[in-house]
Image (cartoon, rainbow, N blue to C red; front, side):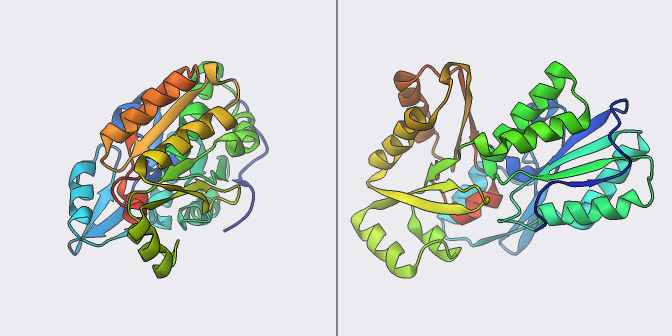
Amino acid sequence: PQKGPFVCGPERNAMRDYIIMTDSCCDLNQQEVDELGLTVLPLSFTIDGKTYLNTPDHAEMSPEEFFAKIAAGENSTTSAANVGQFDEAMRRALDAGKDILCICFSGALSTTYQSACIAAESVRARYPEGRIRVIDSLSASLGQGLLMYLTARKKLREAPAMDELGDWVEANKLHICHWFTVNDLNYLKKGGRVSAATAFVGTMLSIKPIMHTSDEGKLTVVGKARGRKSSLNTLIDTVGRLGIDLQEQTMFICHGDCLDDAEYTAEQIRALVPVKDIIINYVGPVIGAHTGPGVI
């Protein structure tokens, strides 16, 4: 994927209004999307031989149904947002006289960012007065969602020019820490994240990997814990170790249909540090297909 922000259009123009565009890997729900004023393009997933759009309102399949299906042994594959989707959405915004700040799912995990860049270059030829800036979030799931939340709230609160906000995203996107654990190593094995031997031994010994999203936007194993509760406690301890100015921070916890574990994690974090707010959402099928039920 192309490195750095992709910008096309005239020089900086502080006068024109703009929208914030992203994709549904951000795992924000419909209410959050509406409140933040985001334009969200859906990725898709295929299960039982049928392809569904992954939309914030979960209109085609709920997270509960999705995780129940893969827990029962159904295989799911996922597809990126394509060039045509971005082309149509970008033209719609430019027709309305608005520029576009587009922040995408990590280019190291999906071709979604690349598709947005290709579409922006194509659309630019037909709208010479418009500007489109495409940024690789280097994020996934609610890590991406948290970046979108902070970005949109900054726009609503401060009304910065598009490039000012885009520069802020570039300067701050690596300050988002994404830490997670899974409950079943076999899903990581299917995606090539761990070897078959590691998955077998880990399952036998109840070893749970501790992972994070790296500065390159990749899913990386950084540790291990013995048992589910120990893996959750490792995540909780990490908040206290890495968090900065926590009394002013909003945290997102996403889960693969294991709400009790998500709420336990939130309670323990609140007991450990004075976090301003914690928001709990589902992991969507785009990441959930590769991490399985029980991801936190």
